[in-house]
Length: 247
Ligand code: F6R
Image (cartoon, rainbow, N blue to C red; front, side, top):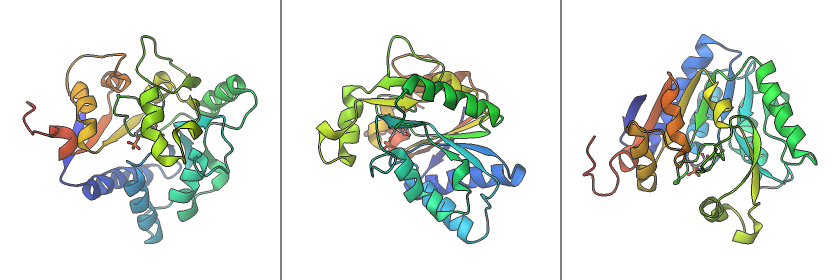
């Protein structure tokens, strides 16, 4: 894994945006995988700025988001569809009909998962996947567990994720208890992956990534089997609170 260590969140956001810009220069009709959460917001702002300045063109791009709450109405302000429209898609010259988020509104979640997996395959696979990471090491909503799933599936959110994400909802009770997420295998099939990690509370999860073990209790450690992963992190995440972790 390659590591880009940044001085600040702004620097991280720019580093991520530049990798996406290079990807679109090399392949204007790229299939991009996107994540939600607070971490990529700065990078999305940067992408919108570059698009406005004419430095990037999204007109031929297709996107697939990692995950979506289940069940949720896409018009709900806490849905990941709403998040992506607000933070990125409405600000760039992308064809919105080529942006895909798992169908959190489907009455048949199993069928929605199968369909999503097939759509990614039919689009030629994901060229570049953007990831964030949970404090517990989750990627997408692949939570720590004894067994992890390879393909897109419905998952129960852990108490720690419900707690972490309750900051976006009026109350903890409003957080959906399930989500549809790409599986570890779906993510690993992406040709290239960038993982953005910010903040001291992610340092334990990042520390596991820098070691040699693959641990189902830290699903992100499966990224070690991929040959093109770039970690983009700030010093708080990399060194942790006391700056004493050996690197
Ligand atoms: C969201 C996702 C999650 C987040 C993770 C970190 O699409 O896939 O795995 O990346 O929960 O969230 P933040 O960035 O809010 O700390």
